[in-house]
Image (cartoon, rainbow, N blue to C red; front, side, top):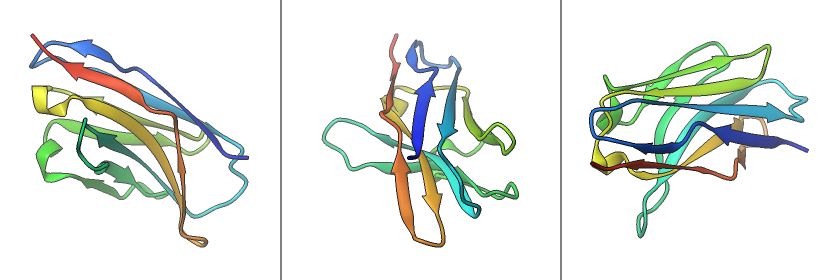
Length: 117
């Protein structure tokens, strides 16, 4: 059973930084992408950043140049370094694993990020 546990959310002032981490367990397959999505109140969940097994990165336009995703395949972890945070980055951030062969998503429980003066 795949489990994803996020950490690192919190309250930060505009312009500040946070680092989110996600530890995965129960992954017994190859060929999966890891990533981060977010959902603000009354908005659909949206992609923030993803990274493939061999390190290919993809970012939402709104975070390019401010956020950096990374992963450790040996430890099965994924991180999101968020710099120059803005109030519009406020959301619940979800860790995701996408298994390409079955086209199946796995989700963490989410961690709250609040950017406010």
